[in-house]
Image (tube, rainbow, N blue to C red):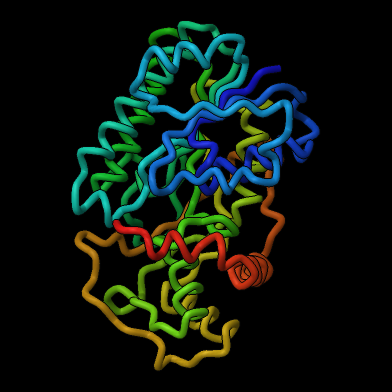
Amino acid sequence: MRYLITGGAGFIGSHFVRRLLSDGYPWLPGGEVVVVDRLTYAGNLANLAPVIDDPRLEFAEGDLCDLALVDKVMHGVRTVVHFAAESHVDRSIDGGLEFVRTNVLGGYTLFDAARRHGVDTCVSVSTDEVYGSIDAGSWPEDHPLDPTSPYSASKAAGDLLARALFHTHGFPVTIVRSSNNYGPYQHPEKLIPLFVTNLLDGRKVPLYGDGGNVREWTFVDDHCRAIALAAHRGRAGHVYNVGSGHTMTNREVTDLLLRLLDHDRSMVEYVEDRKSHDRRYSLDSGKIAAELGFRPATSFADGLAQTVRWYSENRAWWAPLKSAPR
């Protein structure tokens, strides 16, 4: 078996690669793993340090919009798992062109190459943000897409292109849409690692608006296990939501982090809200539970404690990222 993992030096992709190469998914056959990553600010070879010397791992630095590169690395590949994306909402609001280029054009280039090379399976990793905001209840997979940021709109476009190739050509693609992920190796621009590292440095944490925005939090190891199940026996042309049931306001998450790091609310600085800030996300994960047997294994309390401990012990990993220019 030969796997192609795009964005495999990023937060979620590198976790999947580390677990795959440590036989963490026994239902997937072993084999060679090819990682393609552009190594933008969010891609970091240090994320692959635990497996970088594994002879089964091959790394190619490059851009998914480079058709020649994609064709080259696709030779012999049977399974593609597509993580590569521009993913930070704030950056997309400041300038969305790179999000369209990577998430739409790059995604299509990859999918079409995989189709032409006759891969057996492609799993495309998406996001709950394509659905927009929901006042109550939870989104099923067939809920209309209603993205509200350039980031989520570009991800929705990528999803639609993938499914169009399935309907037109029978391309064997499965889409996994996850809630907010958290865990070790996440870039410190995202809420949980930003707040943890700020508090470790004795700096205040910037909380948007009134802090009442609700998110569903899924530990990265649970999400990657769901992706591996989708790669094993997910149905082509189908979408699977992956959530945890752990929904909390940003203010509640902040309070938990303050307690874990022995700070009080004087460390919170309320800042102007993000433009078009979705109020509430919540996924209905019943389909992946019923069809693939997925259940989250990590409680939010345990996952958050593991995450805080990792950042506390790995300052050498995150400190250079926080000092790097935007």
